[in-house]
Length: 485
Ligand SMILES: C[S@@+](CC[C@H](N)C(=O)[O-])C[C@H]1O[C@@H](n2cnc3c(N)ncnc32)[C@H](O)[C@@H]1O
Image 1 (spheres, rainbow, N blue to C red):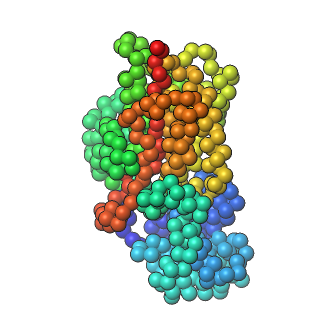
Image 2: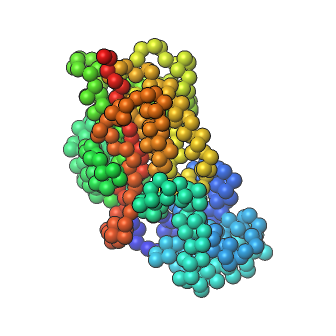
């Protein structure tokens, strides 16, 4: 087994006893078939028997990360596709030859266990699976070469995704694609209403959990815009189940990526600059238009006394906002007043009481192309046409919500995407539609944040330190509505 890297113990194939691997491989082949048929990995995992789920999740994440290379090799070595279950098993086993420099299992274990899995799944395919895997192992370094011939094989992402990144980020596409293969750090946010990092950090120390305060890398914004400090962010050296974090169930901590932790401070910054907040006694009225599962809603409420309306079109997901706020002790008593409402934010007539908002957070539905290291199945589930459909919804949300903002108020548009169509191009088109000047966008707006591994030196440094890129890909535009003349 390779040494485990920081923060990867949830997503790395578990150090299972070899005897269990063949059993897991059978389930993982089924996961792959379900994702190929359009199911999300979490939905497919929910159907795995509970005792095997954690191990299968780790393997399933690995399969999604290396699926492109493994499929290319399967096609090269066995051009006639075997029946779908055998193909899924073989492909899953082939992914376990990557990363080539440190595969998760010794070669002989992998072959033996895959053959055992085949004898349970489709006994007549045993010899075939054995032969293909042994040939793949014999070919050694040539495996990499076999995988190079298609974009999927080379980059482990669909070809349209690679093309889009190369068009949007000619300098950075390779780095973004490499970053997507990394295991993300486990990043926490200390509850500012419980004293924040200064008060809660020692609890991690006392529990023997190594951690460090997290700031965003200076090259995260390709435009080199200065990024706000992350006052409450901590990266754990080793990921742990949340129940082990001291005070988690009492609401001291949340799990939230560093890039996502910028939303609340940015909206606050917008409000502080706004003439609507000149009166210090004024309690701002805020709309969180796409709030579920509530990570940014909670952060806002930790930082600000306000009146907040949290909407989401998905009533079930909205329940998770209520649970999050309950756990964090932000349920709407005291300084904050919170209302949760299931509604399509675009259908203003269904939910708006006519009172304008001082600030709006629009964390819009998007491709999630910035968070693929955390959700490695997303890249295989999306289609290029989704980007156009999602772009349409993002534009409709912007157009519907802008009139609800007080003159002088601010709107923070956010997506966890690295595609410009969901970021800068969306905002440029909005400004044009609404005939707004470029100065509507705050000069300190971060724009695109990239999970960068964008040059060989950074890559080597990352490999040496074992540190993954510190933030997910995100886009933020802070917009100020012109004040009344
Ligand atoms: C990126 S997620 C929001 C994440 C959330 N802000 C957080 O930090 O936890 C986008 C959310 O938008 C919701 N959504 C999609 N279309 C919507 C619409 N038309 N109106 C309101 N919510 C919508 C989805 O259900 C999803 O929960």
